[in-house]
Amino acid sequence: MSSNTAKVDVVLGLQWGDEGKGKIVDVLARKYNIIARFQGGPNAGHSIQSEGRSFVLHSVPSGIFREGTDNIIGGGVVLDPIIFQKECSELEKLGVPVRERIRISKKAHLITPTHRIIDAASEASKGKSKIGSTLKGIGPTYMDKTGRNGLRVGDILASDFQARFEALKKKHIAFLKQFDYTYDPDTDVEAWMAAVDYLRTFDLVDGEYYINDRLKSGCSVLAEGAQGSMLDVDFGSYPFVTSSTTTCSGACLGLGVAPSSIGNVYGIFKAYCTRVGSGPFPTELFDGTGEELRRQGHEFGATTGRPRRTGWLDMVALKYAVMLNGVTGLIMMKADVMDTFDTIKVAEGYIVDGKRQDSVPFDTYAEVIPVYREFKGWKCDLSKIRDERDLPAEFKEYIAYIEKETGVPITVISLGPDRAETIFRE
Ligand code: IMO
Ligand code: MG
Image (cartoon, rainbow, N blue to C red; front, side):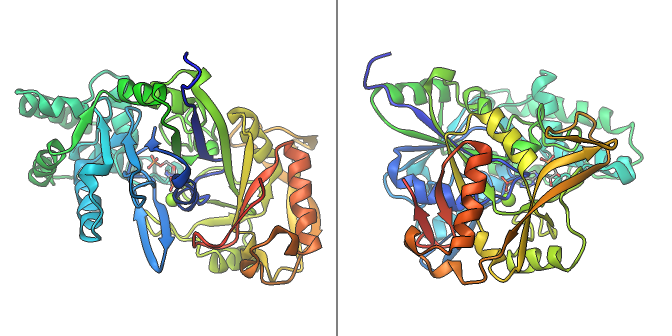
């Protein structure tokens, strides 16, 4: 590699998603030439708020509002043309030149209408053990990818694309026979085809060549993770996970860059925890405090509108995610939500089967009792603070504890949704 080859920095969620990736990527974007999504799809909901404007991105990278920033949808992503078109049309209405700013890897897989139907049928069949999928067709699309049946973005340029689409639809109809599920196989097909026509007007690229060429010429890249480490298909609370690699190695897979190209890894976490959908959540609160976190933190899904489950910070899970991702800098979100709390708790260990352990158990269904450490609340309005030196002592103690436990510095503290409500500690 030549000495001026740039690195890919990665920013990703360390918990169960919804850590605030949209805001942080938007804030960091000015330092990068390229922002790239590497996995996931429209199950993501990345909220950006600036200058009184609020926007939720599902497929488009969060660098879209920055002039001169290139946004890449990498090959590891699954793309629903209908959702993409809708999102881009809304951005265009705001005057964002989407075709100028977005490139899409030909290797990204397409979510078809029947993928969404399979997602719904499969969830309905699971009854109580349902995953709580966003029903965007994510799982079935990744299944077709690894099952070697999938359709890719580059395929839309082929003359027999229509026939390939019909062939996949036929397979899906056969697959759906196992479920006791009523559906119309033609749902959204017309709109989907129209959205594919729209997709053809974009710059479809060989993403791996595109990004490596740009790196060689010194362009800096920020890879934007979706979901969170605890939803990773390999390392999350399986089977209550999403279907992609949400951890750092997913950036290599989804963009086609070598592990040695990875530079800084920024891990985003909330000062407490949330989760949407089913699955283990050891520190979950079912009391007034949990309700307070949800109310003050506006913890309702950006993609599905579902109320999020809430709980205390889980240090066992956080340290696990730091380990898996090789996090070099932590970014802490939303501590301001706990401004009025007298006491703040953090789980620093678990009791499983009557024994203390400091690791995430293999058994997803194991009963886990958290062992808490208590902190005194800071009881003041953090959101107004712009200078680190003005932070209250109790809050400083909380962040010092997290840094000591994880062994990683907290480089950014976000204390509100706006770009301005951010403290940089580097
Ligand atoms: P962002 O990028 C939070 C959850 C779903 C469900 C599980 C599987 O906004 O942080 P899927 O639709 O992927 O098959 O659902 O994963 N989930 C998310 N939770 N934030 C997300 O994305 C999520 N994307 C998926 O709720 O439990
Ligand atoms: Mg979200």
